[in-house]
Image 1 (cartoon, rainbow, N blue to C red):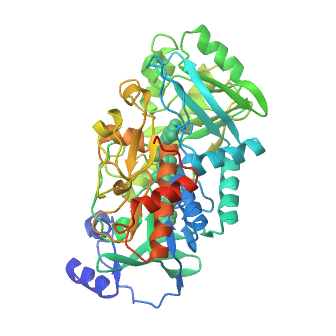
Image 2 (image 1 turned 90 degrees about the vertical axis):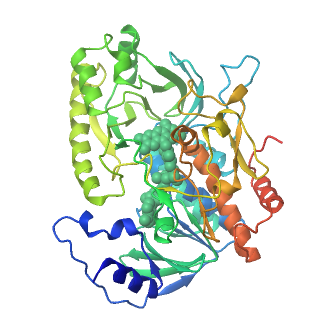
Image 3 (image 1 turned 180 degrees about the vertical axis):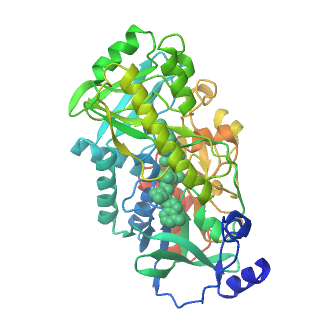
Length: 490
Ligand SMILES: Cc1cc2nc3c(=O)[nH]c(=O)nc-3n(C[C@H](O)[C@H](O)[C@H](O)COP(=O)(O)OP(=O)(O)OC[C@H]3O[C@@H](n4cnc5c(N)ncnc54)[C@H](O)[C@@H]3O)c2cc1C
């Protein structure tokens, strides 16, 4: 069957699949199509379906349920949390960037559910709290590090308390669309295929899987390396710190709660191997540069470096399963080589071992979904606000090169979450914002969480009112977000 007939047959069956996955040339070995009989799926009905239970999705589903929606959260892995528990170094950032601006004070500018997660983790020893980063970097930041395992537990408990129906180990595998609306999400699990119907949907899959299946416009920019961060156990952190200081190689540094004790090192390192050339042995520097390994880390526990990044630039977008399979092997080989370099050259790491890795590589970009508005770098650094702000944010990953004007905040508008051309689909997380440097702000964990709270809240309101996402009155959304303790500047 040719591709056009295949597509027509899928559409007649009510299924929409992204064209990118249907190109036989991308499938090695057998470039034939297999025609599956259209089956009857068991179908469930919800008010809101959130696809992807990661950084943004956990918050979106919690917010939707708290706002009265019968909510389903569909997550491919056996736990929730996504990249925040697998890749990132610290949660950036609940605060503005203030020190470059005389007279400007440190302010917490993201609250709501994002802060609630930290409050929960403080009770179980699962976070360092908000520690100020000092050291040799020339901008300030706040480092909020987490225990990845306790985060998974806290997030699952929070979802259960909110009454979210959580479907882990369940993959979003397609979408059913009628006209400009999605009617259901097709899933695949060990229980077979199912259809999850809803009035409103949130795509927080990072890859933009639901949007792509539903036929939304997207770009695949492939402008970042992928990564698998590993945790190293059996490390003497103070010995490593002393060595880096002695060699003038210490980058940023933060103190906070570690294993219940205040005032401990919770973040240290030197982000890029190049900055330590001439300070640490050449063989070590050349090795980590070649392997794409980062020396910056956070920890919540003694004797543990929680995230050592091992980056790899893929030749194509990480939506390509077969290239990802090759990358998974290369990165794991590079993790082991990185471990060997650490053991050989870094005092304190002589007996280190790989204590955790991410189950699959992490992305910084998958598909970027076209929404009604695309946040620009000027919006971010000029500290622009909109008449439909759903949160404010004050951090940029490329500081000090890019900072928010006057150490303030910019607003993320509701229109930046509305997926173009679809009446009942919102996007939240790393999958919005095309511009590389604007994305270097909006993709950060705490910003993704804030977007999640807005998307989940808006989806619940749209579902209750039986309206499309573009018909929702901003005043209604704003008051529900304020009720949810979201911080606004005015
Ligand atoms: C190596 C690395 C380091 C980083 N460092 C930092 C840092 O120091 N500070 C910071 O603030 N940010 C950092 N970031 C950025 C930040 O972690 C991410 O941008 C953010 O966590 C993305 O959140 P998200 O909700 O968009 O996606 P994710 O948290 O990845 O969530 C997506 C979820 O969707 C699920 N999913 C995907 N497809 C499907 C499907 N088809 N069906 C079902 N489920 C699906 C996934 O399993 C996952 O749980 C880093 C990112 C990386 C990769």
